Length: 151
Image (cartoon, rainbow, N blue to C red):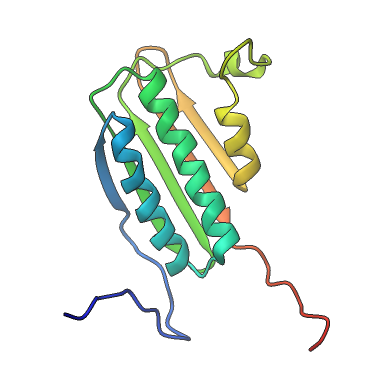
């Protein structure tokens, strides 16, 4: 039995006009699915292994925040692929929160998820209103290739 794999032809323009979307149960066991999809999305966008790792960590943090704080049965993750860039949006319909409250330093346990995500992506857009749910958009561009000094 042959295994099917996604292959991108050199010179072919990459980009999906419509997002790839997953609706996941709000349970830690399903975070792996979000990670697997973002890994493939990163590869399609031309990301190297280190960039893909950062994407996986950012998605893990975002999904974990929903599971811990949103009190919803499910949430959505949307992925968009662009040439050398990826956009991931995590959406929940939970109780939301006041974004201004996040400017304070974390107290005690937790509170570092968004700080970690900010360090892993190039742009983070957070929209949330109390009682209105939350939308977290992360944009990451592929790192520039490092020039090999021996070439």
